[in-house]
Image (tube, rainbow, N blue to C red; front, top):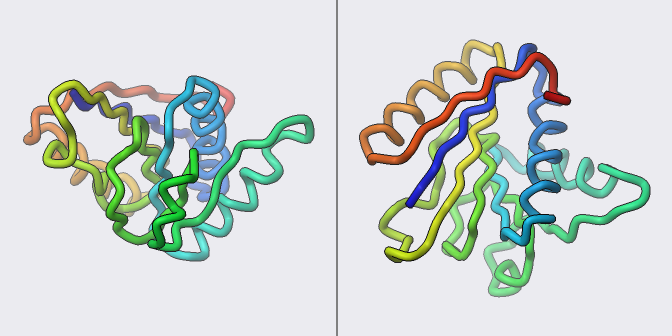
Length: 153
């Protein structure tokens, strides 16, 4: 079963999207889920990597940027701007303009996947969110929306 949560932030800043993604990563990782963070570029992957190193002074979230090597499968949190050949994730945090790279074809009947789409007020991001929503709806995924008043919401 695939559940998709759309989080809609009140501003149009990429930094807000990335900071909120790090909060979701921490929550998912602490719940024991393996997490994939999808980005659109190597620069965005690096920015999220830097944020995860500094999310808290008193904690560490083990993570890495995808290298497309077998060692990627050892990462509890993997950041990738490329399509990867690893479907062993329980959570996908999507900061990219494309829909999740993981799909029903990768899942067994007993596996659950949570996709978290993070959107904001940027017009291009809203358009890609609408495209992704349509793809997910047509695929029969369970969809929920969360309009946030701040990234702390």
